[in-house]
Length: 356
Ligand code: UD1
Image: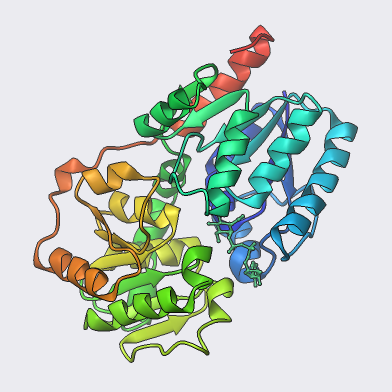
């Protein structure tokens, strides 16, 4: 099979790492990087760190308003698909790179396979929610990481081609566990395992509203614990205008292995990232999510994740609650093995050359 994979943002490099390696063992993959994330800290370093092959094509679209960014991607991906005529287009998650890849392929009748299909926040003000819904509705194969995702698709009338696979981010984490165990970043930063918080903030809903960003930082301040805050470039520009509490230590975005080592050693993670909510739970670290809803409802129902919105008091008390009593370890189930299932499903459908 010939497969075009489209990635563009940091979390997609982490998701593609596990699948690309397995895919290339038996098939031809053409890896397209849209260039949505473009600097060393958000993109470049992850290729070497995760053993992801260098992109065959980098569209270099960079930053910009949603329409322009997505349009440039669409144009570049369409040209490649016309030249290559692949058997599948593979996309991940919910970014502008995801919808651009899916839309370009669907219009050319190249079947789309969507990894992390079916996730919903039910908040259509999130650009990611628009990207997810539209991508799912033009996909031929929809790989769902959770039962809730399968149910979400069924409610929208999508039942054909839906496969519950587990989670590719779990595959990447499992592959990197030995490197994470060897990592010395916690000690290098002078942090005491079990006695600090790791925080990340980058969602538009939190960074576009200074009142929300300020409330989250106030909540981190009120935890009274040392907080390490690797700052996403979108957020960095706003921090001059918002006071950062003294216990909150900023740093540049980190690589995957150091970040996972920090999450593993932290007492609590505070985040608005989708991926980190899951990674925290898989690494047995409780999570406080600074959003009003989550796509990863299982992390909340398991007791490992609490939604605190952008409310300083709720954030501080949720962290204090986890410091007082960590959840029991038995409630976390393994979701590994997704990459092999995804490749198997692509092969099966290609061999049958039929519809799912
Ligand atoms: C994007 C995704 C989001 C994902 C996130 C992970 C969309 C709509 N959003 O959000 O789903 O969770 O990536 O990080 O696709 N920037 C840099 N260097 C970079 C990348 C970005 O400086 O390498 C800055 C740019 O100024 C840019 C801003 O960050 O304007 C935001 O980047 P953008 O690609 O628009 O989306 P993210 O906020 O990263």
